[in-house]
Length: 436
Image 1 (tube, rainbow, N blue to C red):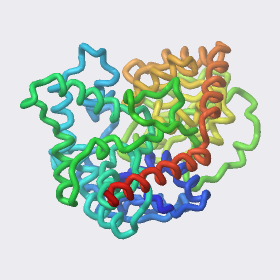
Image 2 (image 1 turned 45 degrees about the vertical axis):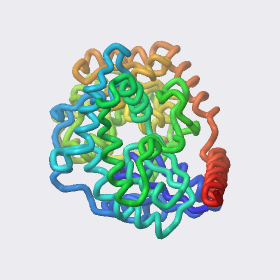
Image 3 (image 1 turned 60 degrees about the vertical axis):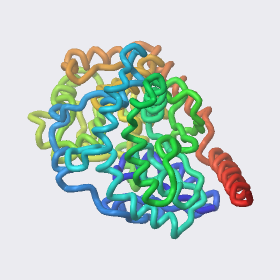
């Protein structure tokens, strides 16, 4: 079968989606990855066929994001996507409606969904109609994927990269809306996507927002989803595109190794981290450990000093690095957190943005991690947390339990057979409808 995988131009999304795409490819299916032109080189480095579509997001938006992460003014989940982690009595329909409105109607004002999707929709629909994929897998905020699938009649689903606040928030919004008068149930998402659907010859349905199914890469202890939605669990596989394992990683460290890795988004899209990197390194300076900090060269230059027990590297393959570590300090980005989890390593998370705080909370609740919020990340707090991870055996034990929970999930290769069945059922249903 033909499979179209699509995402807006975010490298982290590509890395989270590549293993499933490659499982389909090695099972003999024809797979291509469609995104905006700026991601083309990254896609081809994965070995997948790239389809450049639309145009890159406006330079104004990228420039606006190139600020220090601490000054970005967007910690935690924004409305409406904070609703799933709020107590039920604090969920407010009007607040959620306004959040959806902001994300879908203000292109030049920074509306997230319209900014990411509008440059892609026309080309992606046109390509899907020409190529005629049997299956479309789309990143959960790349709603252009659902539109393209509906336009060409393909089966389609979301390929999640973290907790499904998108699906869970949608379920909550529809439930709150149903309790309101029929004349007062405004739905910005349905209005926005419905306009594109009608433009391309079909009507809005909820599948344009949450897909026909969703592939969930999180184990049950970390996962958050929408009740009643169709989730296909799959084992997370670390992926970092073209990488080289340096020789210093071949040898077992003489002292406990601590990795410090605070994410590529902070340096790709921002000019700095949510925490003071100098404070993090200083916190570890007097511990009997070896520290490996992955820090781009431009950010290394901002450090005033480098402790004697710290090795600074511009880049290292994360899966190879963390497997040699006794603990990892990270930002709780899903790819980083899950890569550490697959290695069975305890983690100190310093979460700031969007899904990070909730994902970090769930990892701490499972027992494999500790959490220090950036505003509380003093050298003393960081040092105390790292000592606990090294000295209290329960963290290592729970990290192994989390690793085993992930390994027990179906592999991407196992998932392929289920996706094939989904496509066959969808194809049969379409044929029945056409016959009637």
